[in-house]
Every structure is written in structure tokens, then in C-alpha cells.
Length: 451
Image 1 (cartoon, rainbow, N blue to C red):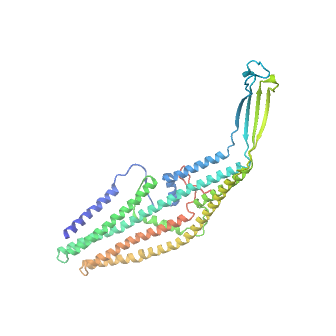
Image 2: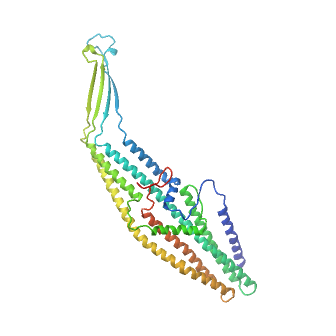
Image 3: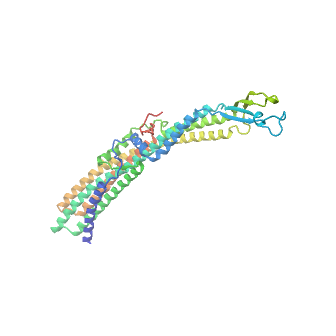
């Protein structure tokens, strides 16, 4: 039993540095590398996502198509050209016995017609402009949502790094306790059971370190999937902790009563509602018939029958909107306008309610973090230090040190979780706020001023 535990401890002790070196020193794949930092805020992440994320490209395409539709709406309709070969003789001519009837009788006509849209150009142009604005805001909203996802991923990696740091310090202390226990055992003052218990506790802590390193690598893998490039871990735990804290401070600095109208998803719905109003105007204009004016010229060579050799004709055609005068299109446009408006109002209402609740939750998370960091952890470290000194002088059994260290390891994990919990709440507050509403240039990924 004892030899098996010692072998297992030795194997774990060798495995941890090997895995750490393998993770840190693995050959990097070619291509750009994303390195997170504490100074990376939401606008900066939006710039990165706009350049790298595949999900934004579909919305950029929709914006480009909407821009083309704006240009199309300002173009005039094309005229129609027609040609006619008429009065082609069949049978006996009148007067009879004309020579070469197929060349001397038929007439040749040419015409040019144009349809004038009445009351339809302005609504069409206004609709196209509103849809382009909606598409532009949707690009920003998609980039913003992807940037917030990236922030959450980096937050998970930062929390895992904090856990690894705290548990790594315990691993070093536990190895020192094992050396002390083995020294006491060789001097006849200890028992093999004490060594075995310490080895089991060391193995337990090493497993926690490996588990959190796996969580960190999993987060970086998700980051690579989002950006399409390799993501590195934070350079040190101070940078990771600063990243988490910076987002909490940004959330605390947001104005709770700020307007939600600047949020890109709200702007997209507002623009879509204006487009629906223009669609309704366009549908109402369907009741106005669009006249088609035609100017024609006829060359008639059958002058032997008294026809006019050269003539012009003008014609006007009007469709009669008796059955379909845009009523179905108008109903559809009104339905879209109502739904877009309702969706917009509910998004704003939910955002304001969530902001209030999330701020209270953030205060609770910060109070919990303060208790653990400022009170519980210092006391737990002091207790472990005192117990280690007492155990070194054989005043108390090593089992008391083991129990105290286990409590300290749980508190170290909880400390990292308090940073992560406060960070997640802060990201949710930023998500509901107007922060990061400036439009992103899809060509360069730079954030510009909102319209």
C-alpha cells in the first residue's frame, strides 16, 4: 500500500512538469497569434472580431448588398424600344398586280416607351436607406456580441490561471511537508501513515492543477475557433487578474440611467421600423397608376393605296389598379412596423430591468470577494503557517496541517471564482448597456463614430 502510494506520487510529480513544458513549449502552428492583455476593452475586441470572426462576414455581406440596393433605388427605369414590320401582304394586293409586293407594301415602325412611376421613387429610396442603416447597425451588433463572447472566453482563461497559481503554491508547500514527514519518519518520530496522507493530499492538489490547466487550454481553443488564429494565455497572473478587475470597473462606471437608443441592436430595429413605414408608403402608392408613354415612328411604303409615307404616333397606357392596389403589401409592412417596434421596446425594457438587478448582484459578488480576499485567505494562510511550525516541532499531528491546507486550497479556488463571478456579471452589465455602440468599418475593422 505504502509503496504503491509513493509510486503514484512520484509519477504525478514527474507528470506535472512534463505536461506543463509540453503545453508551454509545444511547437506553435504558423500564422498570427492573439495575445490577450488587461488593457483590451470592448471596442478593441470589436475591432479584432470584425477582422477575424467568420460570423461577422455574413452581416458585412448583407450591408454591402444593402448599399447596392441604395444605389439601385436612385437609378431611373430603362426605356423600352420596339420595332414593327406591318402590312405584310397575303394574297392579291389592292390595287392588284403590284410588282414586288413584299418590298413595296409593308410598313416599318419604331417606338420608344417609358413608364413613369408616380409616388413610388421616394418611398423606395427611403426604404433602401433605412435598410442600409439597419444592416450597418447589425454588423456592429454582431461584432459586439462576438466581442462579448471573446471577453467571456478570456475571462474563463484568466480565472483558470488564477486557480493554477494558487494551487501551484500549495503543491510546493505540500512537497516540503512530505520531506519533513519523511525526515521525521527516518528519525523515528513519525509514522508511514502520515507520509501516505501527505502524498494523497499532494496528488489531490496536483490533479486540481491539471484540471484547471485543461480548462485554460479549452478556453484558448474556443478563442482560436472564434478568431481563426492561435490564442495565447495571459503572460502572468497579475495581467489575468487585472483583466478581470478592469471589466468590473468598467461596469461600475456605466451610467444606470443612460439611453439604450445607441445600442446597435436597438438602432437596427429602429431603422427596420422606418423601412417598414417606407414600405407602407410604397404599398399605398400602388393605387396610383404608373403611365407608360410611347412615341412611335412609322414608315409606310404602300403609298399606292393612299397611305401616309411618314408618320408619328403617341400613345399612353394606364394600368387599372382595381383588384390589386397594394393592400396586401401595406398590411405586411404595417405588421413588420408593429413587430419591430414591439421588439425594440421589449429589448430596452428588459435591458433596463436587468441592469438594475445585475448591479445589485455585482455588489454582492464584490462583497463576497472582499470577505474571502481580505479576511478569510489571510487568516487561513496564517493558520497553515502556525500549524506547520507546530508540526515541525511535533506539537501537533500532521493531520491538522493537512486539514488546514485543504481549507486553504478551497479558499484559493473560491478566490478565483469570486473574480470570475464578478467578471461575468460585469460583462452582462456591459452587454445590456450602450457601451461599444460605435459602428465598425467592415473594410478595416476600425470603430468609427455612430451615425
